[in-house]
Amino acid sequence: MEPMTGSGVAPAIRWKGALLVLFVLAWAISCIRPPYPSELVLQHIPTVALLIAVVLVDHYGPISLASFASILGFLALHLLGARYIYSNVPYDDWATALLGHDLSSRFGWERNHYDRLVHLAYGLLLVGPLREGLRRWTGVIGGWGGALAICGVLATSAGYEILEWLVAVTLSPEQAEAYNGQQGDMWDAQKDMALAVAGAVVAMGCSLFARRLSQRAPRAT
Image (cartoon, rainbow, N blue to C red; front, side, top):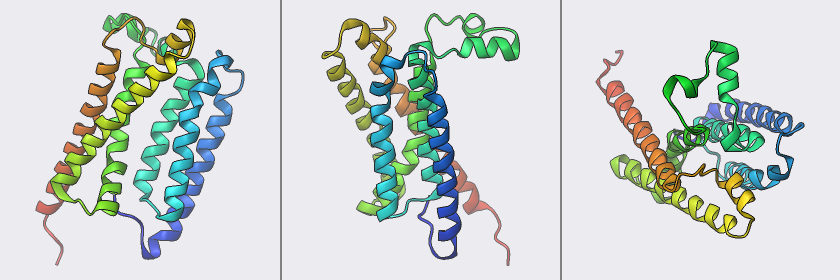
């Protein structure tokens, strides 16, 4: 995921602009008549912070289109979690409407797993941008770049869990549960971090496999 240069700059800017407009539109729609309006502002503080950071970084040192799209893709998943609160995202209702049966009954789930999906997606979608940033700002490349990017996913996941704890201790028990979404699982934070790292490892493994395949492919002469 190299930064766009030369003739690729203008198309990349247009695509980024289009993606940003679509994301802001989806964000606005997600805020219409939210089921839990009192929780919405708190849920979207990280959204605002990350979106501002991405726009500023891209302005002063353009990131690749793939990384830009990956970050917005992750934030798009967060929009659903913020609208419904992660513990109440109604994917069972959606599955029943589409498939005729809900996922929780089919797989024997006893909790809402949307938050698990988003933590997995954090590793899958953001390890690439982290690796790109390491390559650009520290010069670390190759296997070390991938390994450090995975470590970055773990570190930021741990930092976010600590932040959640700090926020939770300042709220009422009901607000804290709604924000953290532990759903009675005392190991929720550890499982979330493990899923993020697993996603990062899978993404880096797929990237390495694709690179090896491209190196072995016969080159046209």
